[in-house]
Image (cartoon, rainbow, N blue to C red; front, top):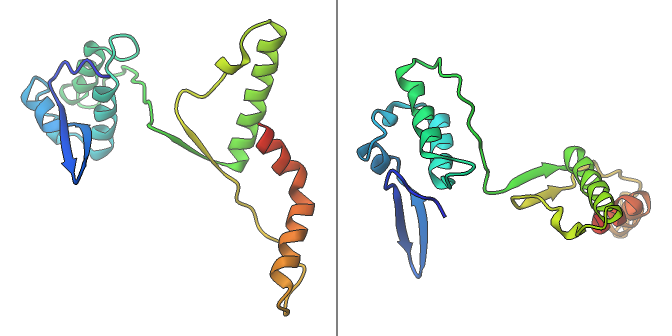
Length: 164
C-alpha cells in the first residue's frame, strides 16, 4: 500500500465494488504544484509513482524529483521506475521469458534454494498468436482438420509453454 505522502488516495464506489485510485488533482492540491499541465504520458507515470510509494522503491523525493521536470523545462535527468499493474507479452518475447524463468528456477534448485521464489513481480499474460495454415478447405470437416494439423505442428511448443 502506498505511503500516500501527497494525500491523493481516493476511493470510488461502483455498485457494490469499491476501487482505490490516486487523484492527481488531490496530489497537486497537496504539494505537487503544476502537475495538471503535464503531458498525459507523464501523468500516467506520476500516478504510478504515487500508487507505488513505499519509501524503498519509490520515495517522496522520487516523486518530487519527477515533478521537477516541469520547472526544469524537461531537462530533469532523474530516472523513475515504472511498475505496471500487469504485463502483456506476445509469444516472440514471452517464450524467451518463459525459457529464462525455467533456467533461473533450475539454477536455484542446483543451489539448493526454493525455485518457487523465481516468479514475475507483476502478473503476466502470454498471448500465443501465429498464423494458422489452411491445409483443408471447402468441406464441413475443414475446421477440425486444420485444428488437428495445428496441434500436430505446434504440440511441442504448447507442451513447453504449459510446463513453463
